[in-house]
Amino acid sequence: MKKCYIFAGGDFDGFFDKIGKDDYVIGADKGYTYIEKIGIKIDTIIGDFDSAQQPDFENKITLKPEKDETDLYAAINFAIKKGYKKIIVYGGLGGRISHTIANIKIMEEFKKKGIDIELKNKNQKLFVIDKNFQEKNK
Image 1: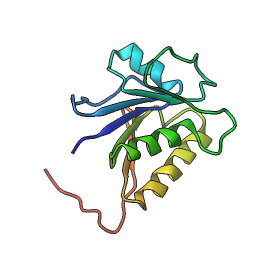
Image 2: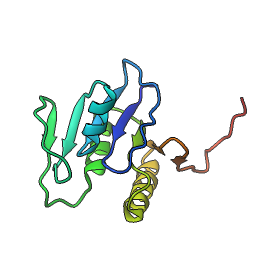
Image 3: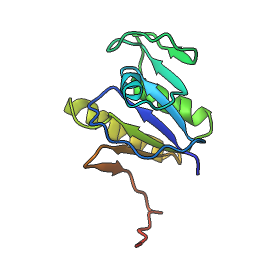
Image 4: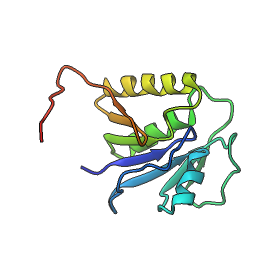
């Protein structure tokens, strides 16, 4: 299954999974700067750029600062419109606890719509389970 990787603007510890050539990479606001530092190909950048300088990038979606959703939320919606149902988010844990809690609530909201989102860093992986969850031993 193809995955979409989103780098959000929160704390980023440098950890990321191996990204396949068919996977999609989005930088959400300041998150694009993390992608540039590690040298991964960026497919799209989305944000209002209130926490980073607006990049000179062809596939950029500029959001209005006065909006009802976060840059990460907009990036997730964009990924879903492109057909992705498996989304991995880096830079969505740590930092301000209010942001982490909001990101967990976002995962819960989208899980109800059949979208699997994981928040990951080097030491943690958060995901939402539902009644269909099955643990498989390797």
